[in-house]
Image 1 (spheres, one colour):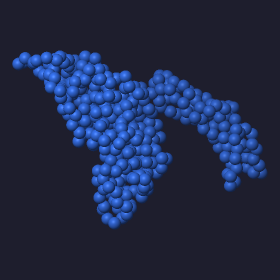
Image 2 (cartoon, helix red, strand yellow; image 1 turned 45 degrees about the vertical axis):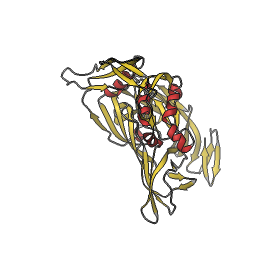
Image 3 (cartoon, one colour; image 1 turned 90 degrees about the vertical axis):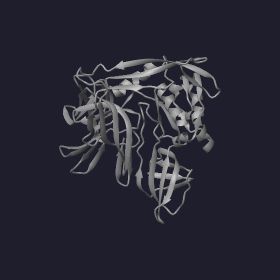
Image 4 (cartoon, helix red, strand yellow; image 1 turned 180 degrees about the horizontal axis):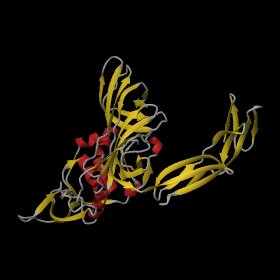
Amino acid sequence: MKIIIGGATYTRLKALSFPPSADLVGQSVPIDAFSVDIITKDDVSIGQMAELWDDLDRLWARYWIVSADRLNSETLQVKAESLLTLLDRQKLNAVMYDAEPVADALVDCFANTGAALGVYEYELDSRFFTATITGFCPEQTARARLLWIVFAIGGYVLSSFHEKIRILPIDSAETLIPMDKTYWRPQVTNSDYVTAVKAKYYTFSEGAPQTTDKWVQDADGTTYIVTESEMSLSNPAVPLEAPENIISIDGVYLLNSENVSDVLSHLSTLYFKRMSVEMDVIDNAEFLPGDRVLAYTGQDSMIAGYIESADFAFGHQAKARLKLIGAESVEAANLTVVYLRGGDQLDRAEYLFPLGYVYTLPNPYFDQVWDAHRYVFRPTTEAVSGTMAASGNAETVQYTEALDLTLSTRELEIISVDELSVEDGVVSIG
């Protein structure tokens, strides 16, 4: 890993800490940060941007330096935070939105970062380009306004692994964390049942309120009478003996009759699933907060859930402790792949995949000795692919000889290769 500050690159790093997160249930907009001890005699100033990159030149974070303290003559301790921290310093006026494009509302939220740095520091996912918001926002910080907006449209905020802060939809697409990238054993916890989620939603009418009316007023002094309604969604999986445990949303004035059903639906997806999982995986920026993943909790068991946080540790590869929420067990079956040369078995592999999972696995080359000959066998097809069935899947791959080395004479016969190169006595084939 390396840190870039003001055009200078630092690779002598110690105590690098980076635990990004994403709030998928609309309780907060997390301010991610990283801290690091840099072995350098350079001094840096707060207010600069610090970038965290890996050795493959992938950006992990671009944050604002909030402290830079010298521990000794050789070591500088730097802490940098997402530019979301600037949103807490900006107050936004009370406003009534009427089918306001989300992109326009976000301009106000991020005005302070633009003023500070001369650039817009956010990116709206294209799936929200046509989204609008309707309702009232009181005077509040830009960060609180951002939270209300993304909650109303079913999104979340991610301020890592990109040069800009991103507003993303909560996606049902699943990414598989391979078994060989998973450390054993993941810790599974089951919380109390949530029996229902409910939310108040609102309509507003301009006028003079009566004594018993609830009302709000925008920054221009226009008064609106508030009408409240409520919608709830019950958990069908709750046992009869489970005590009542309701998640209630109240006072978010951007909830209305048009969006409240969708909001409750995505909250139920997370709250009605009791399982949470903590697991350590090899994670070179492949599995990010907010992602929905498929993961192994045992040799024959799998779950699906959303990554809430990833606490990274760095070595030859990055390792992360992931926390998954809204997790559930998924049915899985075995894929058996047999690798053959004619009628002879070269190898055999077993995989566990969820039912309905579409797999594509590259076929390996084999280097084996048979009857005093050392062969390199190449597959006749590049990969096996299919969709996982409940009864399990079986695949057979045929191989042919690519190279034949007679061990007694050391004579090499090139039989079937697409590419061949020799460098320093090493033969490479393709």
